[in-house]
Image 1: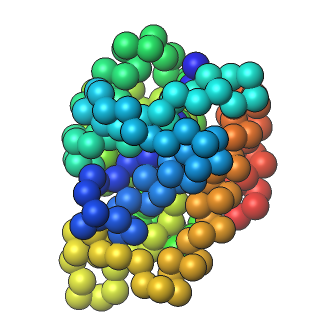
Image 2: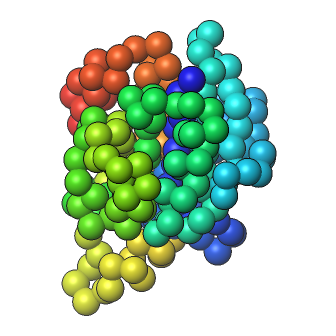
Length: 188
């Protein structure tokens, strides 16, 4: 069984914000599968999906970004999910808007949701998709920027990125992550 986690903050106030891009990918996957993310447990909302003969869980932690690990670890323990079957999707200030990078491990890079995940799992060695949101404009504070909504043009630019990330997740269901990583990182 695979677990795909999109990081973000719960509530309509955070919808379509830069920090919630992980939630958007989970919603895209849920729409494709026809299974809404609406089961409430493990400090999150999730859906159990059968895809390509493989079971997967789509999870949106409801702990707020900085405590994401409090949702991820309990669901992994309950369903006995191995660390190599975890994929976390989140925003990244160090990538240009719309760029994606798949990795099998790495530090938190200042991202509080990843810091929490690493702390609760006790390892940095888990699959991830980083989605670029770029740095804030000069003089704007990082929290204000990441919690700000995408502009109309930016939001349009993010739609194919969300689709590509969902494609990568679906490919991972029956393909080793290293192959998915090589294929999707090559796309830029």
